[in-house]
Structure formats: structure tokens, C-alpha cells
Image (cartoon, rainbow, N blue to C red; front, side):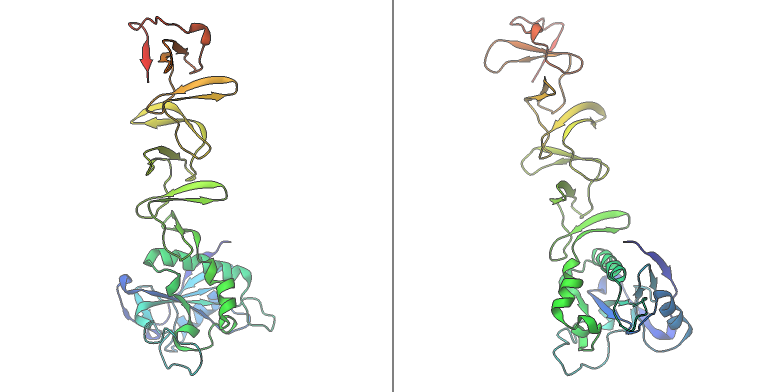
Length: 317
């Protein structure tokens, strides 16, 4: 799923005045009602003609065209209320506080219905706008829900609207080169871990996925996320306060500390700070024995002793 982003602004007579981005509270989904049109054709039409109507964006199978700047009012959801079961947001969602996205049907086959690629692109783009303006799923609605107009006609059926579009407004989305996670309600997850495809990811206080960073958990334990945002497991050579050391993370991504771990038949000790002990003694917790770990961190049992030379060698905890 990918698309090319284009801009072809509509004739200024087709849209309204400037507004603050902060007033955008709704995202409204429309359709062009044409069989075999594209985002480019719609962009050209509204650019070249005065029709006193507009939408902010047009979407098709491979591209999206912006027709009205977000910080301007599009003439897209105003007008009368139709006498049907729609229009539950009539008077609440208006041109001034909404962003309108039109789905094209770029496959001419005598049926007005968007391709799956168009739907996927529209979902992906809508999620980006949800993050940008803090709009959750409750306020992503169809034109039909605004005033009762049969738009998009194929999603007047609420069950199809939910299953084909609305329920998919969750999960990962990218905005300003940062990744965010939308929960089942379309809210940005913050200060929390989420699991996706057996990998754990951490979302920061502003909702941006952490990368290449140490994470202190609520339990007081530590984890580390790599450049893909994944919580690492096993051995990793990492920097802490500009000092590189080996650290070991359990299967849940939790850094091991003050504990022995066995790996490939060898035993290693992770200190209280989590760094692997090297060239050091570790005092037994149950006897007077001191265990020696070599430069590679592996325990060398033949060097166990009750009387270590503490002037020459260090003891780590």
C-alpha cells in the first residue's frame, strides 16, 4: 500500500476562508459518484471550473491530490438535511470544523465502487490526519452521517462502512516521519507498550514510537528498543552514559541484573547495573566462595577461591 501525494488547488471561488488547524474536529468520507475517475481528474476539474463546491482531498488507487489546504474551509458538508435515517451529526459537523476526503473509482466497469487499493490508501491517509489533528474514530464519519445525503452510497449500510473502513482505523500510522499507534477507538497510545506480531514497542509521552533508547518500566526494570522500535532480547552491546557494555534481556525484553545467566553452555554474571561482569570476582550469596569471570565474561570455575586478592582484582555486585 503506497501512494503518490500531489497538489492541485481548486479555484479559490470553490472554497472558503482560512481557519486554524485546531478547529478541525471531524474527518468526513465522501465519494465522487463517478465510474472511472481519478484524483488527478478531480483536481483538474475543481481547479479549472467554478462550482462552489470542494473537498480537501481526492484519493484513488495510486495517488492522493490535495485540492483545498487544510487550513481553509471546503464547501463539502453544508446544505439541507435529508429526510432519512442519516444526519445524526447534522449541525455538529459543519464545513468550518471538518476535513473532507473523497474516494474516487478509477476502475471503469459500470459499477461505482472504489478499488481495494483506493480504500487502503484512504484508510492510511485518514489515520495520518487523525494523528495530525487528534481526531478519534468517533469523529470519522460519512457524508451520510452528516446530513443524510447518500454519500458514499456504498457505505450507507453501516455494517459495510464499519467492516470495510471504519473498523480499520487503528494500528500503526506514520506522521512527520514518526510512527504512532492508534488503539481500537482510534486514540493515540502514549506512555505504554504495545505488542504487534510478537514484537513489543514503546510509545512515548507524545505517542511517538521510541527507537534506539532505554525505557524505564513502571516496575522499575529496564528495556531497550532498537532502531525499528522493537524491544530487544538476548545479548546486546549498548551504551549507557557513554560507556558500552554487554547487556542481556530476557524473552520479555526485560534487562537482567544481579543474576547469572547461562548461554551456550557458559555462565555469565549481570551486575546490579545490568552490565556483564568481566575480569572480576562475584561473591557467592550462599557461601564464602568468590567466582571468577574472565575478559569475555564467562565464569572460569577453576579460579574459584575463598581468598581472592582484593588489592589486585575487583568484586562486583
